[in-house]
Image (tube, rainbow, N blue to C red):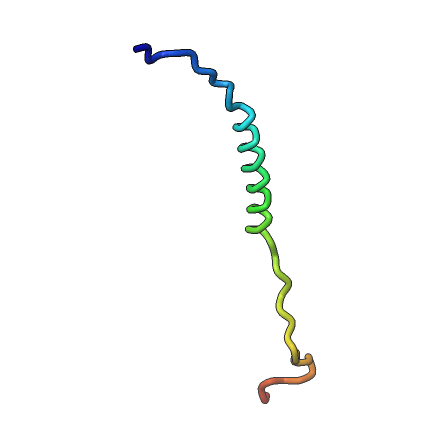
Length: 56
């Protein structure tokens, strides 16, 4: 029984490159997702500057 043999370590090199490219693209989208900014919510009835909510 021969247990040792020639193993081609470069047989999956193309698959490794594809995996790295997918990871980098996913990282870009994840980074954009984390750094997104949403517009502040608009008030339906904003208080004007002339109106004072409290009596002074």
